[in-house]
Image (cartoon, rainbow, N blue to C red; front, side, top):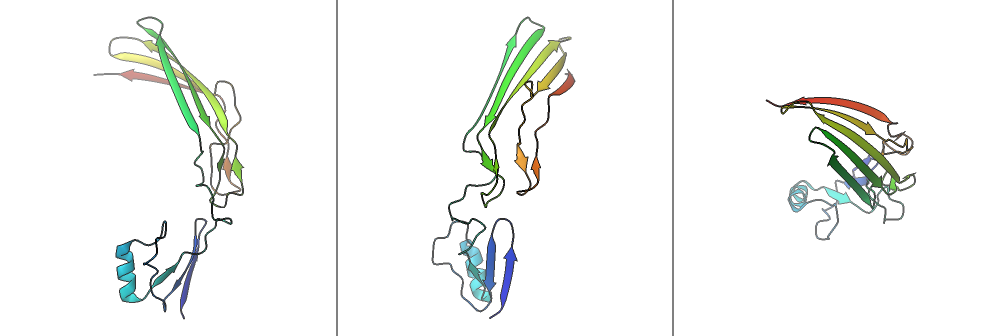
Length: 160
C-alpha cells in the first residue's frame, strides 16, 4: 500500500493509491463526481474520516453566528451632513478546531459630510469613536489581530 498524506489546518487526509474511490457515499465537502471518475481510472481514494475538528461538529472559523451593521446619514442643511454607524458581531472561532474564540464586539463610527460645490464634497470619517478593544480576525490560534483604535480619515471627492 502506498500512502500520500496531507496535514493542513483545515483537514487531514490520507490517499491510499491501492484502494478504490469512496464515491458511492454522500460526503459533505468530499470529492466531486468528476474527480471520482478520474480517480477510479488511476486508482486513487480519499479517506475523509478524520478532520482537524475534534468533535466533528465544529463551527466555521471567523464566521460569527450573528452580525449587524447599521449606518444612517442625516443632512442637516443642503451642504452639511452627519452620519453614524454601528457594527456588531458575536463571537467567532479562530480556526476549524474551535479551541480559541474571538470575542464579540460592537464598534461605533461617525462621519461629517460637507458639499463644497455641486461637483465636490469633503468627508471626515471617525472609526471606532468609543475606542472599543476588539479582535476582528486571526491567522491561526496564536496570531490574533487587534482592531484599529480610533481612526480619523479625510476624503475629498470631485465629480466631472
